[in-house]
Image 1 (cartoon, rainbow, N blue to C red):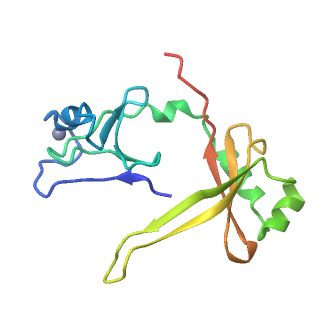
Image 2 (tube, rainbow, N blue to C red; image 1 turned 180 degrees about the vertical axis):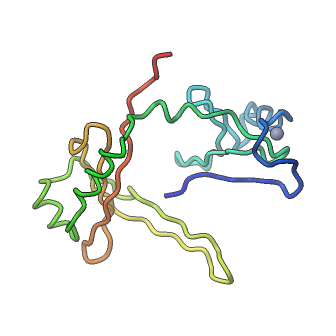
Length: 170
Ligand SMILES: [Zn+2]
């Protein structure tokens, strides 16, 4: 799932090498009616799309400068290469919900729209989107949630997501 916005104006010196100095994002984020918002804790600008849907803004759409370095990474548990490999091996031979339950038991959570995918318009083909019921295990890894998106015929697609560890101690 890609949940980011890369908005680069057409004419711009060295895209993304300097930070935004024009202040347009900052000013917009202070207007209550504006969809551009600022998350003080995460140090991120985002578009508020309503219904708790956010799109992160990495570049200022006005001057092309970078937005501040997000602190988001440090809010989540680190998944080492070894742990990632171990997790991916958990998915081996798991094809359906039955395979999944046989190996791991009942999931801890069920999210009706846990995984959403959007395919952008491309080469004359219209954009389209999908939503998958997602089954979540919280205790298969100390550092990651394990998610299974459920497709047609109860086939499942495994993925992982870092666990939230809270405010970093600075
Ligand atoms: Zn700017």
